Image (cartoon, rainbow, N blue to C red; front, side, top):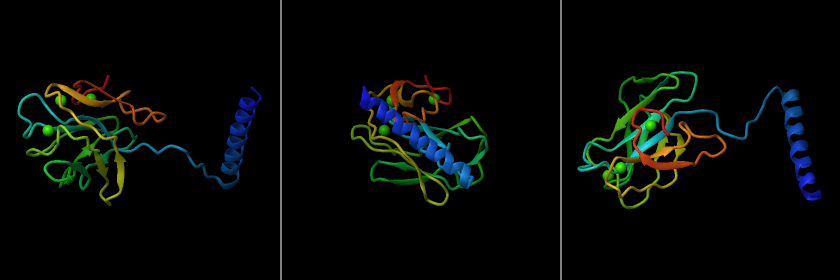
Length: 168
Ligand SMILES: [Ca+2]
Ligand SMILES: [Ca+2]
Ligand SMILES: [Ca+2]
């Protein structure tokens, strides 16, 4: 019990130090990432043929429109690489989503692989856990809750598709 109080005390002490530091410098350093464009849902293996039917749902959780021009997403089949999401200006408004359909056959079903999102400067903005999908049906990988939880950013469920709609 004493230990727990001591730990809470330490945590509160650290918080006070951070807040005091913020007051003194006018800056607050946050422990978690600021909101950014998200990979929110992934269909690796749609029912039937996969060609031209694999997709990712992107979500803009920020308060400003994001232009997809020059952003890239990873693919895994047959080799691994990146595809440009849009060559021209394409705005995703705040809170809105966009479904990117992979051209051709781009995603391995049976060997887990991560999905990465790169901004126009080539920075890795997001890297998911490794996913695979051998179900050959309407089930997809989806963040839970919709848009993710900042405290549990790697919480995903495999469940019936909610393409271009709220996950859940
Ligand atoms: Ca596939
Ligand atoms: Ca599927
Ligand atoms: Ca969805």
